[in-house]
Length: 302
Image 1 (cartoon, rainbow, N blue to C red):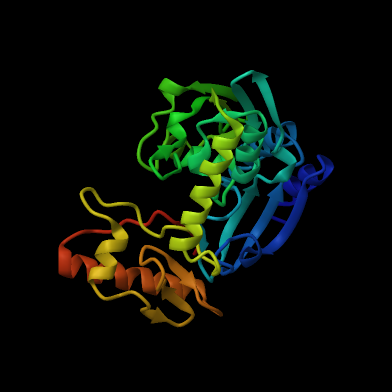
Image 2 (cartoon, rainbow, N blue to C red; image 1 turned 90 degrees about the vertical axis):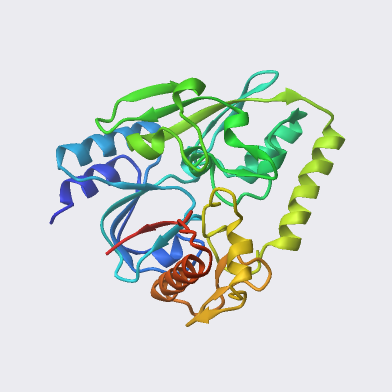
């Protein structure tokens, strides 16, 4: 068996191990074929050992978080996927305005922890569906705020299974990118610096962001959030709407009628439907506006 040693090790370390894992179960698009092997580590130590074993076996694993920004093709993923889940989701205060948390922490839980401790600065992130690891990896942002505004440092495991730290200056945070989008290391925790604030005002700001999301985004349908990156000088949703593509449908995939920047699974969509729709949008926008739309959604698989 190709992954026999890896499976044996992962199970001995208490990890959840699933062969031929249906990725529709692990992604917010609710589509995609099977991954050869999916591993959910039980702890940082088990994650480190699993990564070391992968290196030893010359296997390059794909590391995922909550699957809220991921599209797996219908043919599935021929390889190993490591999913960072709730086993790595501890949160604690280091001092009165500093939070340290593991990257499996959901952004909603992190924002609520900040609220409980009267800490302001994370309100923009309330409603971001992913976990902290994904938010750090792509420097997630919304409503004028970004993770780079609050990140102080990150701890990671490199491809040899060794633990290291990057400070804010080393994180190279930019629009939907970080040092981790280049180095391929696995983020395990982050330290965030916030400011003391008024709990009532923080709560009101969080509720306002959530209300605006619900009003403008098609949260009632499976999607991966904003499908495209913002092209310089433009807004992807406005370009798509100007091409009269709102509501355009291929199979079960549709350009949201609520927000043209979102491709949604209207019901029964396949990953192929979504990919074909993405290509149609890109071709149409380029033909009319001369702008190349890049996907913000990460696409993996055969």
